[in-house]
Image 1 (cartoon, one colour):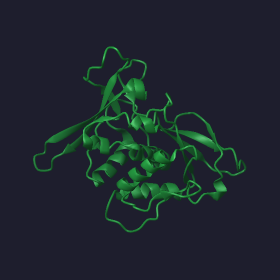
Image 2 (cartoon, one colour; image 1 turned 180 degrees about the horizontal axis):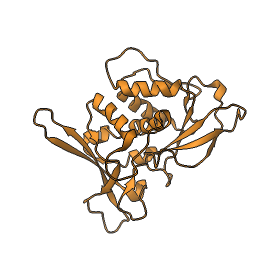
Image 3 (cartoon, one colour; image 1 turned 90 degrees about the vertical axis):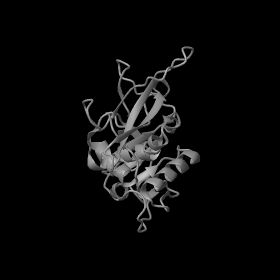
Image 4 (cartoon, helix red, strand yellow; image 1 turned 45 degrees about the vertical axis):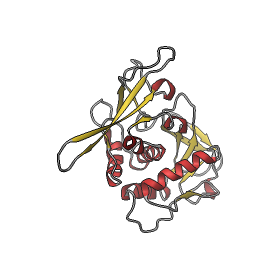
Amino acid sequence: MGLVAFTLCLLVTSVDANSLASKVVIRENVPKANRDELTTRLRTITGLSDLHFDSTGSLLLNENPTSQGSASARALLSRAVTGETLIVLEDASGRSDVAFCRVVPGRLKRDSALQITVYVVLIDFKDFHQLTGDEEARAAFDVGWGLLHEIDHVVTESEDPKITNGVGECEDHINVMRREVGLPLRASYFFTPSSLKADPNFASRFVRLTFERKDGLSAQTKRYWLVWDSITVGGLVADGQRALVQ
């Protein structure tokens, strides 16, 4: 998620900025099923049961006091919806240039006179349905977490790692949120080849991503894995061995 801090690409969006109730808005091209999935995942992470997209597509938090969910995730979304930058969510399901999620600069087709910075988060909902692995890892890496990662890039200007060690500044922020809801933490930014054997009759290349949780009593670290076919999802770099989870 996030090829670099931002990928140099430009999208034109026809969102009417004057009609929006927040600075995070979902495009009309996102099917209801995908919109509902995203809403459900964000509610689970944040603990905000009234979080929803209104008739204009604006993300509304309706922040009622809660002890559930991640306080850091609520704070990040609050900064996003009240900020100066417009963040537009667009369905990119099935696109080969998007692995899970990706954020790119955009500009408004309407209201071109408005001086407002725009970023577009491209979400490939289908990619998240290609994941297999441990239940805890799947809970820590769904479309809600993918969106929060991209929003963190925009709001905090965080960056992903340029070397193979560590998870990077952005995922450090997201791992705080995972810890707050009792989920394992992402242990690496880059995915690696999986030992899972593919059917030779099909073009498949399985990769895996690691999550970890430390046991406070035993000091042991338990690992959880996510596995997917990188041919289907995309994201391979030239050597085919390691790639960014975009």
